[in-house]
Length: 165
Image (cartoon, rainbow, N blue to C red; front, top):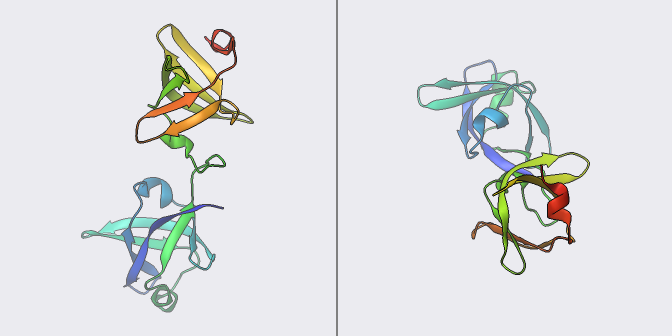
């Protein structure tokens, strides 16, 4: 399981187990919503009970931490969440919308407008003449250049005419 750092507990707050939490995630609403699962560096699991703002800080409540002593024991712990789905190369599907898809010969196919995550990952691609769905298959993908904003693919003959809608 791939994990991403969410933040660090800096100190306890009050007597009911709340902790002051220093964020490192860019998705706090998702990562700290009630019921979200977090892990410490040892793999211990924590479930978010709630979060709130207090002055300029974030106070975090975890179901497993219900008194000041347990909160004190959490001081300095970093918490992690499960990373978004990725392929075997570690490419996160949330990073794909907006990327240009090109054929190996330089022909521009279109821009990824969405990713459909079913039994087969499909790229929804906006083209000049409509939209199409292209399978995310390692056989088709030649290069992914996130910094350059494009994916180079070698698509089978006829796929683009068959996938358009």
